[in-house]
Amino acid sequence: MAVARVRDILAARGGEELALNDAYLNPQLGRIVRTLGLDRRWVRGEGPYLVDERGDRYLDLLCGYGVFALGRNHPEVVAALEDVLEARTANLPQLGVTLLTGVLAEELVARAPASIAAMVPANSGTEAVEAAIKLARAATGRPRILYAEHAFHGLTLGSLSLNGNAEFRDGFGPLLPGCDPVPFGDLDALERELARGGVAAFVVEPVQGKGVNLPPDGYLAGAQERCRAAGALFCVDEVQTGLGRTGRLFALEHWGLEPDLITLAKALSGGFVPTGAVLCSRAVMDRVFDGMERGVRHGSTFGGNDLAAAAGLATLRVLEREGLVEHAARMGDLLLELTRPLVDRYDIVRDVRGLGLMWAIELGEPAGAGRRLYRAVDRAQPGLAAQLLTVPLFHDHRILCQVAGHRMSVVKALPALVVSEADVRGFAAALEEVVAEAERVPTALASLAWRVGRQVVGGRR
Ligand SMILES: Cc1ncc(COP(=O)(O)O)c(C=O)c1O
Image 1: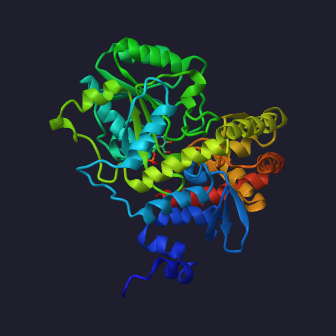
Image 2: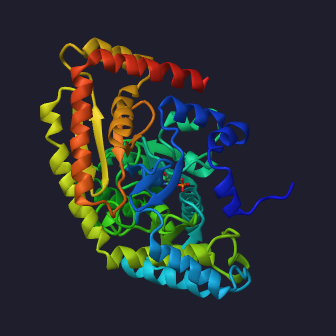
Image 3: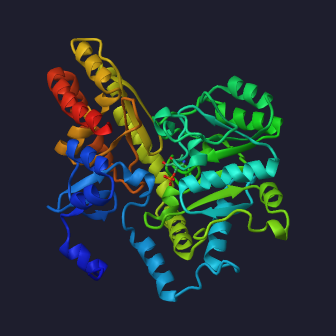
């Protein structure tokens, strides 16, 4: 049987998504999606929205885990990709260099801190982190990499070795030797590990994605200073925070950091082309690629391809022309202003935090009548309480958002940077409604949690 044309597949086979997933992809993902009732048939993406087969629009606060910073299907990114296809460019000559990737590197370096001089292309966030580990080791001649507890840097083996969450690491060992965790925010602990010697780099997210943990005042600048003093490289992982997400082009601008290495991915894709990059200092570039015989010692077949470069260039252009970084800062401030008061208004809300459009609400055990139920729910499946917000947000308010990590009662939102003020206000109002509901009706809370818990726990086995 011949493989059908894509347009025919899209026209004729819609509705088979879950069956195909269960047969050939990951059936457990299918179970999760069905259990949470998220099994919509998505037919289109428009800016900050996902559209289902009935034409209903859902505000997508998951944003493809941060990929759709410009929203979905931004026409300018589409046009840039069409330009490349139309030009029939001499993509990936491999023993040769191309224009678009060079211009992308030039534009990124021009916007990065003064410590940055060059770019190493990659194809994803985890691949950028893998490259950063290799560059750090090769540039310093040292083996050790430090990372923060609760960190997330990707799921290939090197990045996984810097993952501060057991649920991702378990069962995949042995991981890379020489990778040691330090508590996020603890400069003394970092200093102690650096003093043990042999540290090539400290790799850190400026705002941790798992849980949306903000750094304490002075932490990142202090970490940079201590790395310098110890001769270790300072690597800021901006895969999630980069390109406007936190209300600055690079999150590191909030603290005036000057790292040796910066990893990027997600938003750089324009929402279309898997991509990544490591921005590095001249010293790192020259020490790693220190002669012709070592000129190709790191790389990747698709790294620096024309479609990825075009998507990255279009992303920078749109971010600047539409003022999206400033817009993200304003919308983030508004979201915090509207949602922070929930901490005082509701017993069940422990914290609301965020930076720019990286936002989270954390639930905790209520003091009143719901305490026993909450505990029981949390014992059955730690962190499950957060689904008590995400499920009604989806079903009653058409808002898609995520639990911020395993075993945590934290709901996270990563709106597209193009999100409107009306949608931010709509989300805040919807959130208050579901929080109030969860607090008012503990039995409903428990029954929903049990339903979800049984299925999800069963599904894991
Ligand atoms: C900070 C950070 N680094 C690295 C990664 C890995 O990126 P990817 O999923 O593209 O491999 C992620 C993904 O969520 C991330 O948030």
